[in-house]
Structure formats: C-alpha cells, structure tokens
Length: 219
Image 1 (cartoon, rainbow, N blue to C red):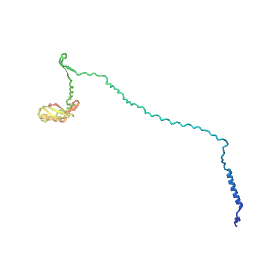
Image 2: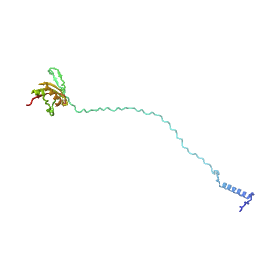
Image 3: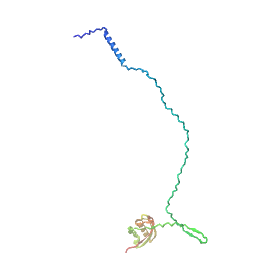
Image 4: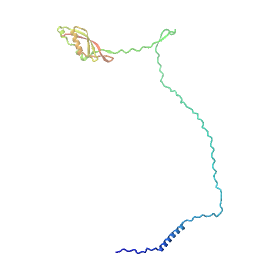
C-alpha cells in the first residue's frame, strides 16, 4: 500500500497576493472611519468681556501692646494658736503640816513647824520551836545502866539548836546530875528529837530551845 503523493504546484499565485492586499486595505480604512473627529469651532458672535469681582484681602491685624500681668501679693497665713485646756479634775485641798506655836503669838512670838518622823518599822513576829507531838514518845532518853545499878535518879537541862527542818543541830549543857545522864540526853536529842521549827514572820528558821529531862526509877 502506497501513500498518496503530493502533486501540488510550487508556482507563484498572483490571485492570492491581490486578495491579501485588499484585505489589509479594508482593515485600515475601517479604522480611519471609526476614529472620533476632533475639530475647533470658531466663535459666531462678538466676544463678551466682563470683570470678575475679587474679595479684598483682609488687612493684617495690628499687634496689640504687650502688657505685664499684675503682680500678685503673696500672703502667708499662720495657723491660729489654740490653747488647750487640760482638765485636772476637782481641786483637792491638802492639809498643811501641823504647826506647833512657840511663845505668845499675840506678843510677837516665833512659830516653829515640826515634821512628823517616819513611823517605826513593824516588829517581826518570831515564834520559837515547839515539840512535834508525833515524836513526843521519843523525848525520854534511855536510862544509863551505871546510874540504874546505883539506883540513882537525875535531872538534865540542855539548850538545843533546832534547824529549819525540825532536827536538832547542836546540844549545849546547862545542868546535869551526872555526866552519864547528860550523855544519854545528848545522844537521844541528836538522833530522835523532832520539833516544829521556829519562824520569823512565817518563814522557818533556826532557833534555840531549852529542854529539861528527868530520870526516875520505877518501883
């Protein structure tokens, strides 16, 4: 199968050229007729001339003379002083010190005043030690064996220093029938005697107390 072979002529065609030129001329003529017409119309009558009123230019205001501000007098105000009154309450009259006249006042005698002395200090309340009843059975000392064999009775008086705790701190001999009776009494006092301590204005303190012990044989 064979394709169709081009058989056109390659020669110049004058009819085509004429057609192309005619088309271009038609387009240019259409553009010329389509453009707007611009022209100048001359005046037909006389030219009227008249004046246009112009508003006058306002005059520049004259500068006003510069005046200085009036001086203001400065007045300083001082707050008023207000006196405050303190209420001290009703007045109390005080009795003057007693005056002891000396001499005859009618005859021009002198007057002397006396100032009362300070009152004396109160006397302290002192209470001496007393026997504690809970230990009353322990007051009697043991009978000395040597004196008991001799069937001798005796009597002893002593001064004891009672401490603030009620115990005996010291024993002093006042009188005794014999040394044996005093020794038995001293030993019993230091070991077993108990007292209610003495006081000074209610406070416990050491104090002395005199005690007498009698030794008697039982029949």
